[in-house]
Length: 228
Image 1 (cartoon, helix red, strand yellow):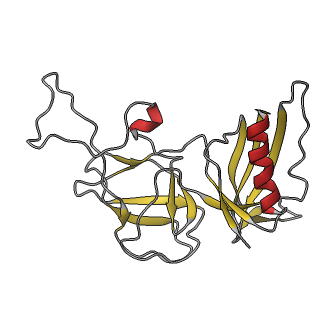
Image 2 (cartoon, helix red, strand yellow):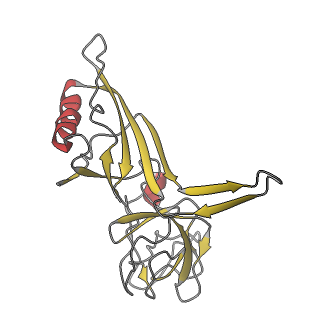
Image 3 (cartoon, helix red, strand yellow):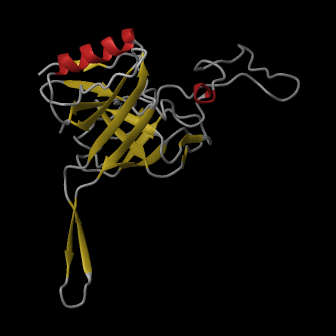
């Protein structure tokens, strides 16, 4: 199996990207009381549409799909809707990532200043497989660390923050995540906050179907699922 990187120039015109849970429901035939069991196997699922594609970009995508050989090989995908965490100036199209500061720590006279980055957040303690929260460090003190819906990467896997989390005065934060932690993680393991990716494979051997419009523009929609 070969793992490929996604070409940066290919961005979908429409996107479905979500965490597909794996639960079992038991319903009493007498009272209709329901019990729900969470099982392992929650996975990220995506459907990306590229329409229209120029001949050059259509060729780039079709070449990648050919290399993936149906479901044989994998490619690393991120959610194009949220490439940066909340508060990252790049999410607003403003300035590049920090940190920035003056050597004497002075601010502008109107009370504003340059955007200050939050260092390099990492795990503040080890976390067991199956954990639904992780202890982290390296955030900007007393500021929003992650907002609900922000993504983070850890050990090559993708997780989503399920609640807003504000860092403590010392820059630590306990972040509730989904899905449960795939594998045990060690202290000081770095978090990926910019375009965190997840390894995915094509759902079927027919994902390269490519209806072509008059004018030579191509439309391709692909479905992918996380490799577990």
